[in-house]
Image (cartoon, rainbow, N blue to C red):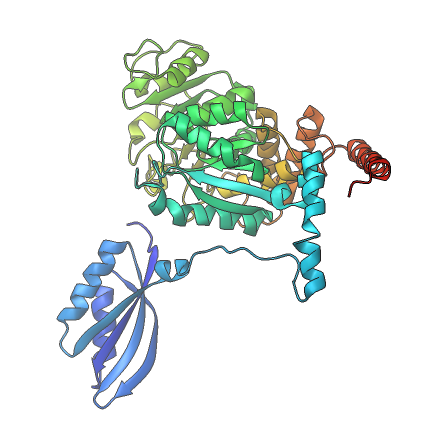
Amino acid sequence: MPPLTQRLTYRLALENAPGMLGRVTAAIDECGGEVVDTERTGEQRHVVFRDVSVDVRDEQHGDEIAALLVELEGVELLAILDDILEAHEGGKIRVEVTRDVLDNEDLALVYTPGVAKVCRLIADDPVAAYRFTIRSNSVAVITDGSAVLGLGDIGPLASLPVMEGKAMLLKSFGGVDAYPLLVDEQDPDLFVDTVARIASGFGGINLEDISAPRCFEIEGKLRQRLDIPVFHDDQHGTAIVVLAALTNAAKVIGRDLTSLRVVVQGIGAAGVAIVNLLRAAGIEDIVPVDIDGILESKRKGTDPIRRRLAKQVNPRELSGQKDVALAGADVFIGVSGPNTLPIELVKTMAEDRIIFALANPTPEIHPDVARGHVRVMATGRSDFPNQINNVLAFPGLFRGLLDAAATTVTDEMKIAAAEAIASMVADDLADDYIIPSPFDRRVVPVVAEAVASTAREQGHVRPGSYGSRESESEAAMHEAARRAVQRAVAQKFTGED
């Protein structure tokens, strides 16, 4: 049975008679709910009002309990309060000012006429925006709502709670000011044009919940057009954390990372990115599989992205179904669907098997089924050890990109992020501890420093910005002073203001 994952509060009016609350709690327990709290909120003549908080499996289970309560004699169901809805009431993020405006002097400094000086400075030197505006710490979280969680194409507006959540995590974990932007356009070229036209106000772009294969085209074209990092978290955030976990899993079984034979099941956005990053990290023997078996370039209907991928991997030129790929494999990485990895196929893999079953909420194989047959097991769920969670990657990655005023994001930066995440486990490494907790606050600064350092080493930083090398920042300050002197001299001889 899956864990109790939602909490509902049933607001009840009970007949003021002995044993009524006991009847209610017994009925809830019989229906599979778990009563976690009861609170008497008032009374009126022969009626007692109570809020009964219950952990339920899902929305349908909550409705079943509600129907049962309605049938109880002496019980009236007044309302159902949902903790999830309450947590989203009014939205999850807001804009805050960094300087109070208390009088005319403050207003003159931050708005007119003082702001005109900063505008002229940026017009003369666009890099100054990284010092004097929010651009240096701003990321746009952008979606078309075409692939939202497990809900599919629900449109951009319905995706806003997810985009708010991503922005909230960027701020909470990484100190990054992130803004949800909804683009109601599914034509890739028009989407790219829209994003490119608004991008100059941001230091980075986080693409989110865009369906494959369109997401590959959109990211590629935006990377070509923009001089700021463009990062599709569904692809690369997952790949970074998978690489971090696999790095440590290899240590657990005493193997070199590059020697592993890996099968990746599910060749969508995340699967393609995982394969590409594992290749960049030096793993050569990777076999991608999907519902039709081993991915092959000659297969009819294969899009260009997957066709190119098929040509780059599978060095042993395996062909056929998933059983062929798994025979003797060291690693299975699933980003596909529930219950799609039979235990019989797991047993055909090499000894000291590593299984990353990342389908959510139901993994490709349940850890309880795999127990005793797998050396290292990871899932995307928080109720089992070794949770592969993107929040380990994207806050620190964007923090580092912004700190360096990076102009792009490279495979080397992603690998540096993965190595930084893996390093946080250190001497505590074990079968059931290959990756730190998403709530380990030590992770973000270590990842940020690794990413920023790599960006500087590669030279992918904006000259003259705070993120570039100190000598470049100093040179830019000298250049700004020189231009100021030139303006003063020009005004003296022309009499211009």
